[in-house]
Image (cartoon, rainbow, N blue to C red; front, top):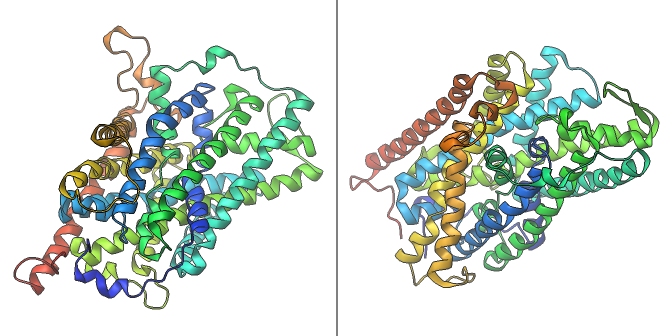
Length: 511
Protein backbone atom coordinates (compact mmCIF):
# COMPACT_ATOMS: atom_id res chain seq x y z
CA UNK A 1 0.00 0.00 0.00
CA UNK A 2 1.28 3.45 -0.95
CA UNK A 3 -0.03 6.04 1.50
CA UNK A 4 1.30 8.99 -0.50
CA UNK A 5 0.36 10.36 -3.89
CA UNK A 6 2.52 10.21 -6.96
CA UNK A 7 3.78 13.70 -6.12
CA UNK A 8 6.17 11.98 -3.72
CA UNK A 9 7.41 9.41 -6.25
CA UNK A 10 9.99 11.72 -7.82
CA UNK A 11 11.37 12.66 -4.41
CA UNK A 12 11.32 9.04 -3.21
CA UNK A 13 13.70 8.04 -5.97
CA UNK A 14 16.34 10.32 -4.41
CA UNK A 15 16.41 8.51 -1.06
CA UNK A 16 19.08 5.99 -0.12
CA UNK A 17 19.03 3.17 2.44
CA UNK A 18 21.41 4.51 5.10
CA UNK A 19 20.05 3.62 8.55
CA UNK A 20 21.01 0.27 10.07
CA UNK A 21 19.56 -1.13 13.29
CA UNK A 22 22.41 0.17 15.46
CA UNK A 23 22.12 3.61 13.83
CA UNK A 24 18.46 3.83 14.81
CA UNK A 25 19.21 2.86 18.43
CA UNK A 26 21.83 5.62 18.73
CA UNK A 27 19.55 8.03 16.86
CA UNK A 28 16.80 7.45 19.41
CA UNK A 29 19.15 7.75 22.39
CA UNK A 30 20.26 11.12 21.02
CA UNK A 31 16.71 12.39 20.55
CA UNK A 32 15.19 10.90 23.72
CA UNK A 33 17.87 12.01 26.17
CA UNK A 34 17.57 15.79 26.12
CA UNK A 35 20.12 17.66 28.24
CA UNK A 36 18.03 20.83 28.40
CA UNK A 37 15.38 19.49 30.82
CA UNK A 38 17.51 17.66 33.40
CA UNK A 39 17.83 20.80 35.53
CA UNK A 40 14.08 21.49 35.27
CA UNK A 41 13.24 18.08 36.75
CA UNK A 42 15.94 18.26 39.44
CA UNK A 43 14.77 21.74 40.47
CA UNK A 44 11.52 20.18 41.75
CA UNK A 45 13.37 17.99 44.25
CA UNK A 46 13.24 14.22 44.88
CA UNK A 47 9.60 14.11 43.81
CA UNK A 48 10.86 14.47 40.25
CA UNK A 49 12.37 10.98 40.39
CA UNK A 50 9.09 9.55 41.68
CA UNK A 51 7.14 11.02 38.81
CA UNK A 52 9.80 9.85 36.35
CA UNK A 53 9.14 6.26 37.42
CA UNK A 54 5.35 6.66 37.39
CA UNK A 55 5.29 8.33 33.97
CA UNK A 56 7.68 5.73 32.56
CA UNK A 57 4.90 3.21 33.21
CA UNK A 58 1.79 5.23 32.31
CA UNK A 59 3.24 7.27 29.42
CA UNK A 60 6.60 6.04 28.11
CA UNK A 61 5.64 2.37 27.82
CA UNK A 62 2.26 2.83 26.08
CA UNK A 63 3.73 5.55 23.84
CA UNK A 64 6.48 3.17 22.75
CA UNK A 65 3.97 0.39 22.01
CA UNK A 66 1.80 2.81 20.02
CA UNK A 67 4.66 4.01 17.83
CA UNK A 68 6.00 0.48 17.35
CA UNK A 69 2.68 -0.65 15.85
CA UNK A 70 2.17 2.40 13.64
CA UNK A 71 5.80 2.46 12.49
CA UNK A 72 5.78 -1.19 11.42
CA UNK A 73 2.26 -1.25 9.94
CA UNK A 74 2.84 1.87 7.82
CA UNK A 75 6.58 1.98 7.00
CA UNK A 76 6.37 5.04 4.75
CA UNK A 77 8.65 8.09 4.70
CA UNK A 78 7.09 10.87 6.73
CA UNK A 79 5.99 8.73 9.68
CA UNK A 80 3.56 10.77 11.85
CA UNK A 81 2.34 12.82 8.87
CA UNK A 82 1.39 9.63 7.01
CA UNK A 83 -0.33 8.04 10.03
CA UNK A 84 -2.35 11.20 10.66
CA UNK A 85 -3.23 11.58 6.97
CA UNK A 86 -4.51 8.02 6.71
CA UNK A 87 -6.55 8.49 9.87
CA UNK A 88 -7.93 12.03 9.48
CA UNK A 89 -7.16 13.25 5.96
CA UNK A 90 -4.56 15.43 4.29
CA UNK A 91 -5.80 18.80 5.59
CA UNK A 92 -5.74 17.85 9.26
CA UNK A 93 -2.41 16.08 8.82
CA UNK A 94 -0.95 19.08 6.98
CA UNK A 95 -1.79 21.57 9.74
CA UNK A 96 -0.67 19.11 12.40
CA UNK A 97 2.63 18.50 10.64
CA UNK A 98 3.45 22.21 10.54
CA UNK A 99 3.10 22.33 14.35
CA UNK A 100 5.41 19.32 14.64
CA UNK A 101 7.96 20.85 12.29
CA UNK A 102 7.94 24.38 13.74
CA UNK A 103 8.72 22.93 17.16
CA UNK A 104 12.28 22.32 16.00
CA UNK A 105 13.37 25.87 15.08
CA UNK A 106 11.62 27.22 18.21
CA UNK A 107 13.48 24.66 20.35
CA UNK A 108 16.86 25.14 18.67
CA UNK A 109 16.61 28.93 18.68
CA UNK A 110 15.16 28.85 22.20
CA UNK A 111 16.16 26.54 25.05
CA UNK A 112 18.98 24.69 23.26
CA UNK A 113 20.77 27.87 22.28
CA UNK A 114 20.38 29.53 25.68
CA UNK A 115 21.79 26.49 27.52
CA UNK A 116 24.68 26.28 25.06
CA UNK A 117 25.42 29.98 25.63
CA UNK A 118 25.13 29.61 29.42
CA UNK A 119 27.45 26.60 29.37
CA UNK A 120 29.99 28.48 27.27
CA UNK A 121 29.98 31.47 29.61
CA UNK A 122 30.14 29.26 32.73
CA UNK A 123 33.17 27.25 31.63
CA UNK A 124 34.95 29.41 29.06
CA UNK A 125 34.43 33.18 28.92
CA UNK A 126 31.83 35.94 29.08
CA UNK A 127 30.48 36.62 25.60
CA UNK A 128 29.02 40.10 25.97
CA UNK A 129 25.97 41.24 24.03
CA UNK A 130 27.43 41.01 20.53
CA UNK A 131 29.24 37.76 21.27
CA UNK A 132 26.01 36.19 22.51
CA UNK A 133 24.31 36.78 19.18
CA UNK A 134 27.33 35.67 17.14
CA UNK A 135 27.94 32.44 19.05
CA UNK A 136 24.21 31.69 19.12
CA UNK A 137 23.98 32.02 15.34
CA UNK A 138 27.07 29.83 14.85
CA UNK A 139 25.46 27.16 17.06
CA UNK A 140 22.23 27.26 15.04
CA UNK A 141 23.83 27.14 11.60
CA UNK A 142 26.26 24.35 12.47
CA UNK A 143 23.12 22.32 13.10
CA UNK A 144 21.65 23.36 9.75
CA UNK A 145 24.79 22.22 7.95
CA UNK A 146 24.77 18.89 9.77
CA UNK A 147 21.14 18.21 8.82
CA UNK A 148 21.81 19.18 5.18
CA UNK A 149 24.41 16.42 4.76
CA UNK A 150 23.40 13.11 3.21
CA UNK A 151 21.98 10.72 5.80
CA UNK A 152 24.85 8.33 5.13
CA UNK A 153 27.13 10.97 6.67
CA UNK A 154 24.65 12.95 8.75
CA UNK A 155 23.55 9.90 10.78
CA UNK A 156 26.93 10.00 12.54
CA UNK A 157 26.00 13.30 14.18
CA UNK A 158 23.21 11.75 16.33
CA UNK A 159 25.47 8.74 16.90
CA UNK A 160 28.20 11.05 18.20
CA UNK A 161 25.58 12.79 20.31
CA UNK A 162 24.42 9.52 21.84
CA UNK A 163 27.99 8.54 22.68
CA UNK A 164 28.65 12.02 24.13
CA UNK A 165 25.58 11.62 26.37
CA UNK A 166 26.65 8.20 27.61
CA UNK A 167 30.18 9.42 28.36
CA UNK A 168 29.14 12.77 29.87
CA UNK A 169 26.30 11.47 32.03
CA UNK A 170 28.26 8.37 33.00
CA UNK A 171 31.30 10.41 34.03
CA UNK A 172 29.09 12.83 35.94
CA UNK A 173 27.44 9.97 37.86
CA UNK A 174 30.82 8.45 38.76
CA UNK A 175 32.09 11.88 39.84
CA UNK A 176 29.06 12.30 42.10
CA UNK A 177 30.04 9.08 43.90
CA UNK A 178 33.61 10.33 44.31
CA UNK A 179 32.37 13.72 45.51
CA UNK A 180 29.98 12.09 47.99
CA UNK A 181 32.72 9.91 49.45
CA UNK A 182 34.95 12.93 49.94
CA UNK A 183 32.52 15.67 50.99
CA UNK A 184 29.29 13.93 51.86
CA UNK A 185 25.97 14.52 50.14
CA UNK A 186 22.73 16.41 50.69
CA UNK A 187 20.30 14.45 52.88
CA UNK A 188 17.17 13.31 51.03
CA UNK A 189 14.15 12.51 53.20
CA UNK A 190 11.62 9.85 52.29
CA UNK A 191 8.85 12.46 52.46
CA UNK A 192 10.57 14.40 49.67
CA UNK A 193 9.84 11.54 47.25
CA UNK A 194 6.09 11.51 48.02
CA UNK A 195 4.06 12.38 44.90
CA UNK A 196 1.67 15.32 45.01
CA UNK A 197 -0.68 17.05 42.59
CA UNK A 198 1.28 20.30 42.79
CA UNK A 199 4.46 18.40 41.98
CA UNK A 200 2.72 16.54 39.18
CA UNK A 201 1.56 19.62 37.30
CA UNK A 202 4.98 21.25 37.78
CA UNK A 203 6.88 18.20 36.56
CA UNK A 204 4.67 16.50 33.98
CA UNK A 205 5.68 18.80 31.06
CA UNK A 206 9.40 18.20 31.56
CA UNK A 207 9.26 14.51 32.44
CA UNK A 208 7.01 13.62 29.52
CA UNK A 209 9.08 15.80 27.20
CA UNK A 210 12.10 13.77 28.32
CA UNK A 211 10.24 10.70 27.11
CA UNK A 212 9.25 11.70 23.57
CA UNK A 213 10.94 11.08 20.24
CA UNK A 214 10.14 7.43 19.44
CA UNK A 215 8.44 8.39 16.17
CA UNK A 216 11.42 10.26 14.70
CA UNK A 217 13.15 7.31 12.94
CA UNK A 218 9.83 6.49 11.26
CA UNK A 219 10.04 9.82 9.41
CA UNK A 220 12.96 8.26 7.52
CA UNK A 221 11.47 4.77 7.16
CA UNK A 222 12.30 4.47 3.48
CA UNK A 223 15.94 5.18 4.29
CA UNK A 224 16.02 2.39 6.90
CA UNK A 225 17.06 -1.22 6.48
CA UNK A 226 14.19 -3.58 7.38
CA UNK A 227 12.06 -1.03 9.30
CA UNK A 228 9.49 -3.62 10.41
CA UNK A 229 12.11 -5.28 12.61
CA UNK A 230 14.31 -2.29 13.31
CA UNK A 231 11.65 0.02 14.81
CA UNK A 232 10.49 -2.25 17.70
CA UNK A 233 14.09 -3.35 18.39
CA UNK A 234 15.32 0.25 18.65
CA UNK A 235 12.37 1.46 20.72
CA UNK A 236 12.88 -1.21 23.41
CA UNK A 237 16.61 -0.68 23.82
CA UNK A 238 16.66 3.09 23.60
CA UNK A 239 13.72 3.34 26.00
CA UNK A 240 15.54 1.42 28.72
CA UNK A 241 18.72 3.39 28.09
CA UNK A 242 16.90 6.74 28.29
CA UNK A 243 15.37 6.00 31.71
CA UNK A 244 18.78 5.04 33.10
CA UNK A 245 20.59 8.01 31.57
CA UNK A 246 18.05 10.45 33.06
CA UNK A 247 17.70 8.92 36.51
CA UNK A 248 21.38 8.83 37.52
CA UNK A 249 22.23 12.48 36.76
CA UNK A 250 19.03 13.85 38.33
CA UNK A 251 19.73 11.93 41.53
CA UNK A 252 23.31 13.20 41.38
CA UNK A 253 22.17 16.84 41.20
CA UNK A 254 19.91 16.34 44.19
CA UNK A 255 22.74 14.81 46.19
CA UNK A 256 25.42 17.44 45.60
CA UNK A 257 23.67 20.78 44.96
CA UNK A 258 21.82 22.49 47.83
CA UNK A 259 18.09 22.51 47.10
CA UNK A 260 17.84 26.31 47.12
CA UNK A 261 20.54 26.57 44.43
CA UNK A 262 19.10 24.20 41.83
CA UNK A 263 17.80 26.21 38.89
CA UNK A 264 15.84 24.99 35.88
CA UNK A 265 18.36 26.48 33.48
CA UNK A 266 21.65 25.96 35.31
CA UNK A 267 20.92 22.98 37.57
CA UNK A 268 22.92 20.44 35.57
CA UNK A 269 25.65 22.94 34.72
CA UNK A 270 26.10 23.96 38.36
CA UNK A 271 26.14 20.34 39.51
CA UNK A 272 28.79 19.43 36.94
CA UNK A 273 31.00 22.27 38.06
CA UNK A 274 30.57 21.40 41.74
CA UNK A 275 31.38 17.69 41.49
CA UNK A 276 34.42 18.38 39.32
CA UNK A 277 36.07 20.14 42.26
CA UNK A 278 37.06 16.66 43.49
CA UNK A 279 39.67 16.69 40.73
CA UNK A 280 40.81 20.24 41.48
CA UNK A 281 39.01 23.32 42.76
CA UNK A 282 36.92 24.61 45.63
CA UNK A 283 33.46 25.83 46.66
CA UNK A 284 33.35 28.94 48.85
CA UNK A 285 30.68 29.50 51.55
CA UNK A 286 28.49 31.50 49.16
CA UNK A 287 28.39 28.57 46.75
CA UNK A 288 30.71 30.04 44.11
CA UNK A 289 32.77 27.30 42.44
CA UNK A 290 36.34 27.63 41.21
CA UNK A 291 37.93 24.86 39.16
CA UNK A 292 41.70 24.40 39.02
CA UNK A 293 44.15 21.86 37.62
CA UNK A 294 42.57 18.59 36.50
CA UNK A 295 39.16 19.91 37.59
CA UNK A 296 39.45 22.74 35.10
CA UNK A 297 40.54 20.35 32.35
CA UNK A 298 37.63 18.01 33.01
CA UNK A 299 35.32 21.01 33.21
CA UNK A 300 36.36 22.13 29.75
CA UNK A 301 35.85 18.63 28.35
CA UNK A 302 32.44 18.24 30.00
CA UNK A 303 31.33 21.69 28.80
CA UNK A 304 32.29 20.78 25.24
CA UNK A 305 30.44 17.48 25.60
CA UNK A 306 27.34 19.25 26.89
CA UNK A 307 27.33 21.72 24.00
CA UNK A 308 27.82 18.85 21.52
CA UNK A 309 24.96 17.01 23.20
CA UNK A 310 22.68 20.03 22.83
CA UNK A 311 23.65 20.55 19.19
CA UNK A 312 23.08 16.90 18.30
CA UNK A 313 19.67 16.93 20.02
CA UNK A 314 18.58 19.66 17.64
CA UNK A 315 20.11 17.83 14.68
CA UNK A 316 18.43 14.52 15.55
CA UNK A 317 14.97 16.07 15.84
CA UNK A 318 15.55 18.15 12.71
CA UNK A 319 16.46 15.10 10.63
CA UNK A 320 13.05 13.67 11.45
CA UNK A 321 10.81 16.75 11.56
CA UNK A 322 12.24 18.24 8.37
CA UNK A 323 11.73 15.03 6.41
CA UNK A 324 8.13 14.74 7.55
CA UNK A 325 7.47 18.34 6.51
CA UNK A 326 9.03 17.80 3.11
CA UNK A 327 6.88 14.71 2.59
CA UNK A 328 3.76 16.69 3.53
CA UNK A 329 4.61 19.47 1.06
CA UNK A 330 5.39 17.04 -1.76
CA UNK A 331 2.10 15.29 -1.00
CA UNK A 332 0.10 18.51 -1.49
CA UNK A 333 -0.24 19.66 2.14
CA UNK A 334 2.11 22.61 1.70
CA UNK A 335 4.15 24.61 -0.82
CA UNK A 336 5.46 22.19 -3.44
CA UNK A 337 8.91 23.80 -3.53
CA UNK A 338 9.47 22.92 0.14
CA UNK A 339 8.92 19.26 -0.67
CA UNK A 340 12.00 19.07 -2.85
CA UNK A 341 14.61 16.46 -1.88
CA UNK A 342 18.17 17.18 -2.98
CA UNK A 343 19.15 14.81 -5.79
CA UNK A 344 22.77 14.94 -4.59
CA UNK A 345 22.33 14.60 -0.84
CA UNK A 346 18.91 13.01 -0.46
CA UNK A 347 17.88 15.57 2.18
CA UNK A 348 15.19 18.32 2.25
CA UNK A 349 17.64 21.22 2.06
CA UNK A 350 14.99 23.90 1.49
CA UNK A 351 13.13 22.95 4.67
CA UNK A 352 16.49 22.82 6.48
CA UNK A 353 17.46 26.33 5.46
CA UNK A 354 14.03 27.77 6.24
CA UNK A 355 14.20 26.15 9.69
CA UNK A 356 17.62 27.72 10.26
CA UNK A 357 16.24 31.15 9.39
CA UNK A 358 13.30 30.65 11.77
CA UNK A 359 15.59 29.44 14.57
CA UNK A 360 17.78 32.52 14.10
CA UNK A 361 14.75 34.82 14.22
CA UNK A 362 13.52 33.02 17.35
CA UNK A 363 16.85 33.55 19.08
CA UNK A 364 17.10 37.24 18.18
CA UNK A 365 13.49 37.98 19.14
CA UNK A 366 13.72 36.03 22.39
CA UNK A 367 16.90 37.78 23.49
CA UNK A 368 15.43 41.16 22.58
CA UNK A 369 11.99 40.68 24.15
CA UNK A 370 13.32 39.21 27.41
CA UNK A 371 15.91 41.95 27.83
CA UNK A 372 18.70 39.38 27.75
CA UNK A 373 17.25 37.45 30.72
CA UNK A 374 18.43 33.88 30.14
CA UNK A 375 15.98 32.40 32.65
CA UNK A 376 12.99 34.11 30.98
CA UNK A 377 14.22 33.19 27.53
CA UNK A 378 14.68 29.58 28.63
CA UNK A 379 11.31 29.25 30.41
CA UNK A 380 9.26 30.73 27.57
CA UNK A 381 11.14 28.87 24.84
CA UNK A 382 11.01 25.47 26.52
CA UNK A 383 7.34 25.82 27.44
CA UNK A 384 6.43 26.74 23.87
CA UNK A 385 8.50 23.89 22.44
CA UNK A 386 6.75 21.34 24.63
CA UNK A 387 3.24 22.68 24.04
CA UNK A 388 3.65 22.82 20.23
CA UNK A 389 4.99 19.27 20.13
CA UNK A 390 2.24 17.96 22.38
CA UNK A 391 -0.59 19.65 20.47
CA UNK A 392 0.55 17.68 17.41
CA UNK A 393 0.64 14.48 19.48
CA UNK A 394 -2.98 15.02 20.58
CA UNK A 395 -3.91 14.53 16.91
CA UNK A 396 -1.33 11.87 15.97
CA UNK A 397 -1.71 9.40 18.86
CA UNK A 398 -5.39 8.54 18.22
CA UNK A 399 -4.36 7.36 14.73
CA UNK A 400 -3.66 3.94 16.25
CA UNK A 401 -7.33 3.28 17.06
CA UNK A 402 -8.69 4.98 13.95
CA UNK A 403 -6.42 3.00 11.61
CA UNK A 404 -7.19 -0.29 13.35
CA UNK A 405 -10.83 0.36 12.51
CA UNK A 406 -10.33 1.87 9.01
CA UNK A 407 -7.60 -0.53 7.85
CA UNK A 408 -7.94 -3.75 9.85
CA UNK A 409 -6.44 -5.90 7.10
CA UNK A 410 -3.11 -4.04 6.89
CA UNK A 411 -0.37 -6.42 8.11
CA UNK A 412 0.96 -5.38 11.53
CA UNK A 413 4.32 -7.08 12.17
CA UNK A 414 4.20 -5.63 15.67
CA UNK A 415 0.78 -5.37 17.26
CA UNK A 416 -0.04 -3.93 20.69
CA UNK A 417 -0.91 -7.09 22.63
CA UNK A 418 -4.22 -7.61 24.40
CA UNK A 419 -6.79 -6.77 21.78
CA UNK A 420 -8.96 -3.67 21.36
CA UNK A 421 -9.14 -2.88 25.08
CA UNK A 422 -5.37 -2.70 25.50
CA UNK A 423 -5.04 -0.68 22.30
CA UNK A 424 -7.56 1.80 23.69
CA UNK A 425 -5.60 2.20 26.94
CA UNK A 426 -2.31 2.50 25.05
CA UNK A 427 -3.83 5.25 22.91
CA UNK A 428 -5.81 7.18 25.51
CA UNK A 429 -3.20 7.36 28.31
CA UNK A 430 -0.53 9.18 26.24
CA UNK A 431 -3.15 11.32 24.47
CA UNK A 432 -4.78 12.52 27.70
CA UNK A 433 -1.42 13.15 29.36
CA UNK A 434 -0.08 15.31 26.52
CA UNK A 435 -3.39 17.20 26.32
CA UNK A 436 -3.27 17.87 30.07
CA UNK A 437 0.36 18.97 29.73
CA UNK A 438 -0.56 21.57 27.11
CA UNK A 439 -3.23 22.96 29.44
CA UNK A 440 -0.79 23.22 32.37
CA UNK A 441 1.83 24.90 30.21
CA UNK A 442 -0.59 27.54 28.98
CA UNK A 443 -2.03 28.02 32.48
CA UNK A 444 0.53 26.91 35.09
CA UNK A 445 -1.05 25.80 38.35
CA UNK A 446 -4.20 24.46 36.68
CA UNK A 447 -6.29 22.82 39.41
CA UNK A 448 -4.16 24.02 42.32
CA UNK A 449 -6.40 25.41 45.08
CA UNK A 450 -9.55 23.96 43.51
CA UNK A 451 -12.19 22.16 45.57
CA UNK A 452 -10.72 23.39 48.84
CA UNK A 453 -7.21 22.02 48.23
CA UNK A 454 -4.10 23.83 49.41
CA UNK A 455 -1.77 25.84 47.24
CA UNK A 456 -1.61 28.98 45.12
CA UNK A 457 -1.67 28.46 41.33
CA UNK A 458 0.63 31.45 40.83
CA UNK A 459 3.38 29.53 42.63
CA UNK A 460 3.48 27.20 39.63
CA UNK A 461 4.58 29.96 37.26
CA UNK A 462 8.19 29.68 36.07
CA UNK A 463 10.45 31.53 38.51
CA UNK A 464 11.49 34.01 35.83
CA UNK A 465 7.82 34.93 35.30
CA UNK A 466 6.83 35.24 38.97
CA UNK A 467 3.84 37.57 39.21
CA UNK A 468 3.63 37.84 35.40
CA UNK A 469 0.93 35.31 34.49
CA UNK A 470 -0.46 37.31 31.57
CA UNK A 471 3.00 37.85 30.10
CA UNK A 472 3.81 34.15 30.34
CA UNK A 473 0.47 32.98 28.97
CA UNK A 474 0.77 35.32 25.99
CA UNK A 475 4.30 33.99 25.35
CA UNK A 476 2.65 30.60 24.79
CA UNK A 477 -0.69 31.42 23.15
CA UNK A 478 0.47 33.94 20.55
CA UNK A 479 3.16 31.70 18.97
CA UNK A 480 0.84 28.67 19.16
CA UNK A 481 -1.89 30.58 17.36
CA UNK A 482 0.61 31.81 14.77
CA UNK A 483 1.79 28.23 14.16
CA UNK A 484 -1.78 27.06 13.53
CA UNK A 485 -2.33 29.94 11.10
CA UNK A 486 0.87 29.02 9.26
CA UNK A 487 -0.33 25.41 9.08
CA UNK A 488 -3.66 26.47 7.58
CA UNK A 489 -1.88 28.72 5.05
CA UNK A 490 0.43 25.85 4.08
CA UNK A 491 -2.53 23.56 3.43
CA UNK A 492 -4.33 26.26 1.42
CA UNK A 493 -1.16 26.93 -0.57
CA UNK A 494 -0.81 23.25 -1.37
CA UNK A 495 -4.49 23.04 -2.33
CA UNK A 496 -4.20 26.10 -4.58
CA UNK A 497 -1.27 24.52 -6.41
CA UNK A 498 -3.33 21.36 -6.75
CA UNK A 499 -6.29 23.11 -8.33
CA UNK A 500 -4.16 24.98 -10.84
CA UNK A 501 -2.79 21.65 -12.06
CA UNK A 502 -5.78 19.34 -11.66
CA UNK A 503 -9.36 20.65 -11.80
CA UNK A 504 -10.51 17.67 -9.75
CA UNK A 505 -8.79 19.21 -6.74
CA UNK A 506 -6.18 16.56 -6.03
CA UNK A 507 -2.49 17.05 -6.65
CA UNK A 508 -2.16 13.39 -7.54
CA UNK A 509 -4.47 10.62 -6.41
CA UNK A 510 -3.57 8.75 -3.23
CA UNK A 511 -3.22 5.08 -4.04
